[in-house]
Length: 242
Ligand code: 1GP
Image (cartoon, rainbow, N blue to C red; front, side):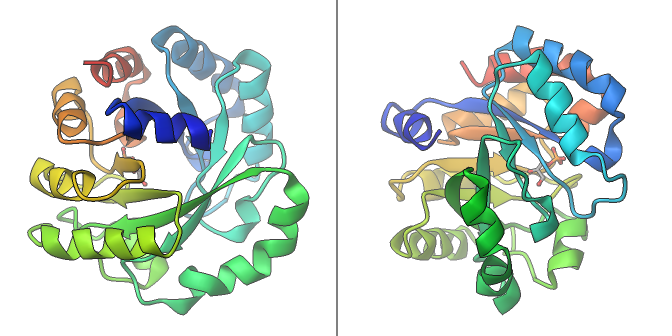
């Protein structure tokens, strides 16, 4: 996966990831989601959430993999969401925050599990940007997002994440953000870092996807809009290809 991501960056291309929150879906609906993802040429299924109320994440991964060859990537809200059934793990460090637990503490706790899992580990500098509302991730992480009008802080944070050795940078306005990340901020970061850039939070239209890709996003992540209308997958994925 990492090689594919690096290729996207080198070739200035973009891909599309559907984010599935196992708390917001029924396992019996997963085959239909897989079919839509297959037809749309989705690049990755990200799976994870802030909580894990329904205890069905592994069932959802299994159902998805029975119906699709699209790689399943864990986007975990906590160490309980590490599963060897997936293909890869976004190994998140919340570098926009100053909460030591999310910079190293939970990594130490989950290290034996991750080591034993056989998952491909994608070390991810995770940067929260203010999306105009308090998002679950901001509350749960006890961290303040970077102000939306401070691209220079976002860039310095991304540089720091790159120099610390992260494989990718993920800038996120948070699930259900009122405002998605501005193209100015995306451009500033993408033009100045050499590792792939993921963008997510509050994206719901093909136009927005296209703008973000033109600004330099390598992976667009959409969750909420697809939960509302799964038929959007095709147009959103298509928009990453120009
Ligand atoms: C959230 O980036 C993801 O972490 C996706 O956000 O659910 O708003 O699409 P949405």
